[in-house]
Length: 124
Image 1 (spheres, one colour):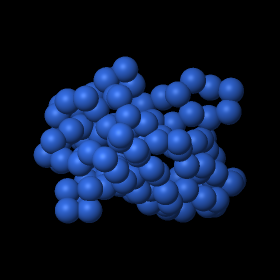
Image 2 (image 1 turned 120 degrees about the vertical axis):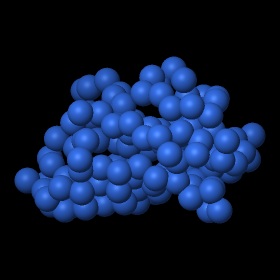
Image 3 (image 1 turned 30 degrees about the vertical axis):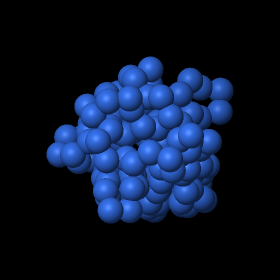
């Protein structure tokens, strides 16, 4: 059984940084694409960033482009989201997910294993 777990969320002031980590258990991250999504209170879940199986291809939503960076470490079976220049509107629960294939996608329907999320709160 595959289990995905996020960590690294917390409370930070606007302009600060956080690094989210995502680990997979029961299936290696290598060979599969991965992504980060977020859901703010009262809003639908939205795409944040994605990475392909190799780490060579990345994709970002317009709202985080230039501020966030997704990366992966095959040896640690982990995917990361470095978040810089955080804004209050980045406040949300952040979810990590792994795809059913090796490619990259911003479509949540492409992802079949999800973590429970980690809360990120950015104060103004």
